[in-house]
Length: 82
Image (cartoon, rainbow, N blue to C red; front, side):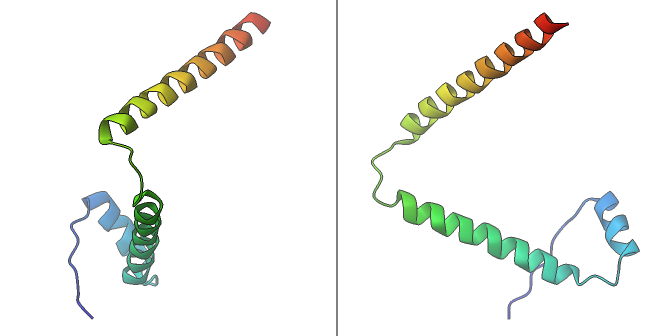
């Protein structure tokens, strides 16, 4: 099995060192498998898509604006109650 070396921030390293009973390589391996499987699923879902990067950006911006509007409305409603 190939091996991999990871660079991690010092604060994470200190936390990991406190818990040497944990098999951190197994945690990392599982996390990478989960992420890779999600990428494969996404690739499978999008393989026949005609959506361009520009289309995706435009849709994402509309979604973000809608979410912002929704939360601003909720904030306004909450402030009106007080």
